[in-house]
Amino acid sequence: MSRGRPRNFSRDEALASAMQLFWDKGYDNTSLSDLTRAMGLNPPSLYAAFGSKAQLFIEAVDLYGRTDGAGIWDELETVPTAKAAVHDLLRRTAENFTQRGEPRGCMVVLSAPQMAGGDAEVCDALKLRRLEKQMALEQRFERAVEEGELPVGVDCAAIAAYVASLQHGMSIQARDGATRETLVAIADCAAAGWDAMISANIRPD
Image 1 (cartoon, rainbow, N blue to C red):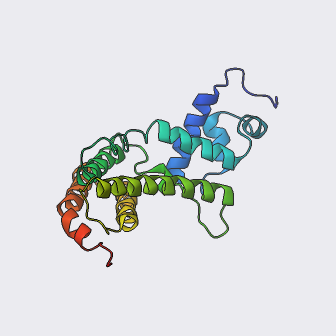
Image 2 (tube, helix red, strand yellow; image 1 turned 60 degrees about the horizontal axis):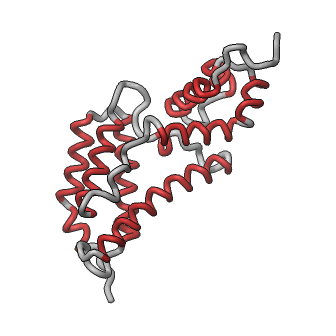
């Protein structure tokens, strides 16, 4: 049997197949044989093209961010208020997580390996991507303080962690079969409780 790549090998198509598999089964539960079968490659070809399972996974996560995961965060900086930006973000999340009938929810959240004994390279890469989104929220709230929308002393880091945690929870709900209506209702509940949540997170002088 030839150890080279198939004559019609398409790296982009193979990566897209790996992305769907990792998204569906998670990093730990996706075996090398799963990957080679889905991608149409033998192990030497897979390693030659992508380096390792971990490197392939990280590339697949980045592909997810450019394709199926795209659009959720697009308006965070352009929506006029922080409250409206969060509501828009969560409603976009609800729509994104319930499109089509394939693996739903966020790949970055749902495909993460177990931390204990997990691949450190993969765990660190996913943690970094999650923290980047949370930091984007925190910076948006800090801007809202500067613009006078949010009160001075509000704990922007805590609010950002709350919104990020809510979005991660929506991902679990989606994987468990929650409808778009249910997820939109979660977004609406967050918006309805915004003012009380802000008031409860003002740091004392």
